[in-house]
Length: 453
Ligand SMILES: Cc1cc2nc3c(=O)[nH]c(=O)nc-3n(C[C@H](O)[C@H](O)[C@H](O)COP(=O)(O)OP(=O)(O)OC[C@H]3O[C@@H](n4cnc5c(N)ncnc54)[C@H](O)[C@@H]3O)c2cc1C
Image (cartoon, rainbow, N blue to C red; front, side, top):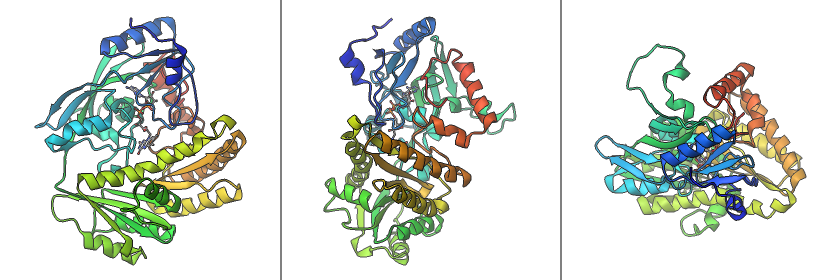
């Protein structure tokens, strides 16, 4: 059995994620091999001790922190076990950072498609457990479709291998039982600890361009997003929206020379192809929607696209920083990740703004994956009372969102913070089935208690 660390400083070091909450675990385990993970889970099962897996702890929903039992950090499971260039697959341990994997793949002309903007800090295991997505999900899909197989340690210490079937047809049983990989992708640590994964990779396209397209008015920007999704003249890899404040944060983070100033909104688009990208078509579409086309910035090549990515990442990072100062008063950032069918997005955002104004909140900063109908509305609650007001405002929006066929959580998972909103989306039968799966794989309810259920 590896030593469990109970030293307070170490436990406190694992007590925060990006949710703004603090939960100090009773002990921390830092296994560096599958055998050590198995040891922890076997012992925990025998002693009925809860175990919460954690990777980079960038969760915005308090999914990766706990004050019940052991926090099992996967950060020492950080080996890239194999890159098969011909088969375009990689086998990695779950604590590998996505950014490190991308750096290892780049010399082979390959990449792992899921691109959460936190990719330099988050792990493959965390991305799998949350079915993470990112700007380029518009083209490539979320993490789920890029996972070919998993090695998972269950509570009690059993290790199982689950693999995608290569069958093209299958009518045996209910679909959720046909591919067990899907049980673990998005399970937020509640069903097992992912110790290793086999991932599908993509070849890097020959040409990748990005355009930061400014608009005076955010409604023009959101109308442009809908047209760009439906146009046959362009095929965007991402369609990201930044409202005026989000655009100013990006520019302020070293973007002064490459990012538009004093605008109502920016739409950042990328297109990737093996032939000439349709720049003229993009500019014509933008002009038709009243974009400030003289101020469009073009990003081309890895270095330049990396700058655009960093500026975009500055927005959630800065919002997180802004909220830290209110922590002592019980304040925090509340970040939504609801999604609706993309053509409904402008109407919901307009409602969000009206509700925030009516409740006299700091206006939320809104940015994110508009091409998927999926923004992040970042509110800052300055004290505990204001946090409660914001949650009530958000809940009203979530009821509308679900009514429109949307989801309460499109990419950050449910964790602990949003578990109360799951019943808005899942009816009683779905909730019973969720619990039945949980009971089957974790009968004692010891894995990641409080997450999802
Ligand atoms: C600034 C910022 C930007 C972000 N941008 C995005 C974005 O663009 N897209 C997006 O999808 N998310 C984003 N996120 C949220 C977060 O980064 C992702 O959910 C990420 O995938 C979490 O990975 P992690 O390694 O940090 O996991 P953690 O936060 O450590 O854990 C997250 C969940 O996964 C579980 N878990 C972790 N490792 C394992 C494992 N090996 N086995 C089983 N369960 C495990 C934990 O129990 C927890 O439930 C962002 C967060 C921040 C702070």
